[in-house]
Image (cartoon, rainbow, N blue to C red; front, side, top):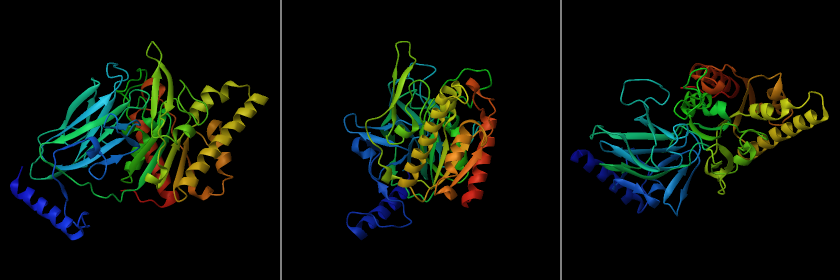
Length: 402
């Protein structure tokens, strides 16, 4: 490490501490954390900037990262960063989890680039695995590294056990970035978006970082908090996946599997999410397709059963939106669907049009092309939809794109 840089940062940190006794006062300096490993309780507090819904497990001394696009950001002086993960389903080529790494703010919306600063992809193939997520950095600079889970809760339960550098960590900076909640099923989770039409789905060809919700949020420089999983509905879905209404209240999701490895259920974790810990500026929702396809559309049109199902779906839409608005009354909401005039989109819009806070909601139609793996939207469609969603959010709510 460069001794001069170390001394300057150490002096700045000491001066900040001296001005307030125990708490560093606000300044333009970078307060040094005089340690090279963050583990146990050092993972929580002000040492790491956790992104999305995470939870510290005192028994295992790990931080659970259940949802996709969930992880952390750290700042440090040093040439490398090593992260020890724990994970389930690592022996499954279809389900093993993937983590993406962005270095010094570069590349978090790029898919292919030879520049070493761009997103790198790391699959986890062991239940406890240490990964050198970046190496060969300039020891004379302060570096920022972001590590995010690309795969979904259903595929693997993942957590962070330790974060290690060959230098020293620096306190995270406070962020003024707009906060986005992103809620829904497979479409917004990037299911199959890196694959091609006709291919089977895997965690390797899927990534929420290339789903339209995350891409749209990044057009505003936003930070994301996901509550999503493939197969999720607002009331009815597939494979025993919890409803969005139930999942919204929990910190994460955890899956159980049948003997053949197929999903038996995906249920909310016992821990309840502290809604006061984060307040979104914008909520992007893409839900209802699984309700329509797995239940509503299977009932005879015009029948009493179909009408009952449609009414129950509408009630669920109102319940979810009332809950979000009650918790975060200043948040604007983008409800996305394939059609405003047919199917689940029309049902949702009929509810939204009657809400007293209708002015805070925009209903956005997105492209339903299936140019990716497993009959889902591919990267081209995801990027197109991100442009559509970001443009309409900006027009409706005045949020400025970067």
